Image (cartoon, rainbow, N blue to C red; front, side, top):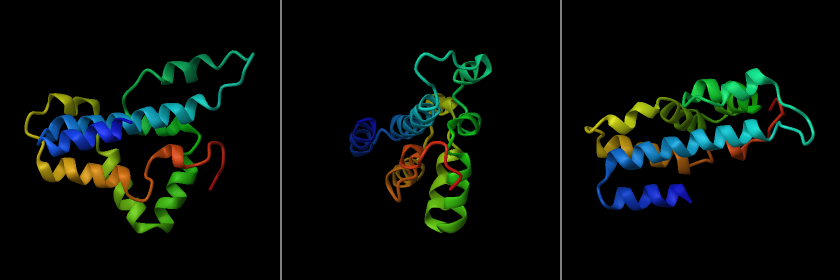
Length: 128
């Protein structure tokens, strides 16, 4: 849903907003992967829960349960690797950067939508 919103922002030339929203989509996807590890009737580890309170994609990837699979796929699929390298450079502070270029925003859109770079396309808890 938010990827469609980012597309609409791109169409209107709102490069910074589109770039930020696309990164936020990946942040949410990583958090969704991590949340899949929670079990009903089980209190999750306090450290894991505390780890959710970040916007850093590298930290979220570490708790996501898909890190090994993502790294394996990046080694075997050069386009996926390029896309992931584009995505992982995002940070929440991008929302305050007024000089985001069209190329950066469109590159992020391509990275998020091409070859399923979204972590939710990977299986939680598998090694690859």
